Length: 440
Image (cartoon, rainbow, N blue to C red; front, side, top):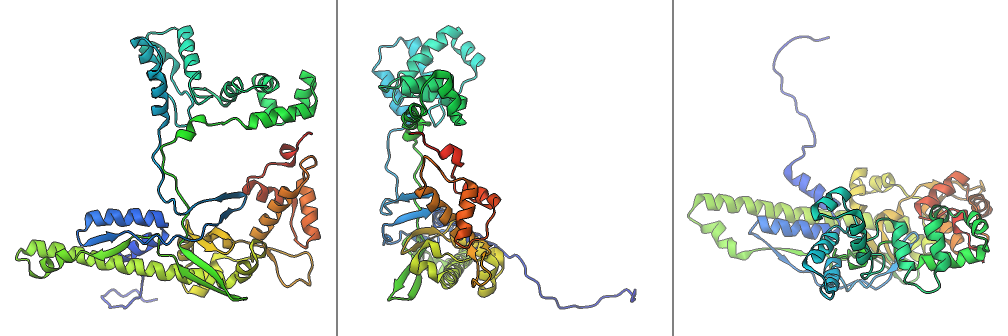
């Protein structure tokens, strides 16, 4: 053991987190929308950065697939249309009423106490003291609030919100009784208990439930002034011929970064040293930004090509053919760290012949096959697709239990447990068989 003291030189290779590397990592993990916002902020900080809007060569209008959430979006509508807010809609209605200055003051205070979903959120004692009211007077004003549109506005609970809407609908007597007197049992689908207590058939409860489902649980949300976020793919996948699959970057989503030529002469010939130093610094930042953006493109395309290579059967035949795939497998093929792949797929989308899919959709664990002679395993994603299909096709009068789904999947060769099915069902947002059952 050498315990001598002294000075020695030693060469060592290590990765240092430079400003440039940090920026490259940050840019990689941004989605298209987030990256555009980042570039706009950089343009405000750096006069050499000039942004140019991308050519909106929009992808094909397709069905967006996110497990059980299937929506069709028109991707030409990148910007939300300005519309009247909930507050504006309600204040217009107040202006049409003949109210005293005091009544108007209290009503406006109530409107200011609504949350974005249209529910009334007030500190009772504080509100009464602030407006010099008794509880009975406040209830009168709240009743006036409930008379405004949309129905259900100013409710203090979901139960009250649904009840207010049902009061304005014809043929809602049974539904009102259920909501007002048996709300908890109804929500827990203890319908047999309700039917016995109020002496009606289960099919009548079902009809009332269908009536109740047409009510809006968040009436104020339809006037939300928040901007709509559309899913925009960054990669395009096309099938060429019978068996070839090609992937390319979709550049119609990211703003273009150009050099502001107006500062080029200043950078070279400005007499003030401080100005030249400042411009050189900004020029270096500009070059780093370009390199980071180019690196992001290269990484996204490399990851996209590997996904297409590993999941070729999906792109040729559809979601049922998704294969097991891990981040580690792709990272090893791409010769990068697993975290780089994670950043590259997070919040990014891919346009495919079968719709727009989040890139992380193509990564899933393996499920063993029951038959030992089978060549491999199914992915957890394909199992979820199968669960989704079985539930959609089931007889709603006799919905499939988790165990029944297990048995059906085992018959198809999947080695799954009831616990796994319950977990996947929850992830898909599918309720239990008891909650899915219809009485007709």
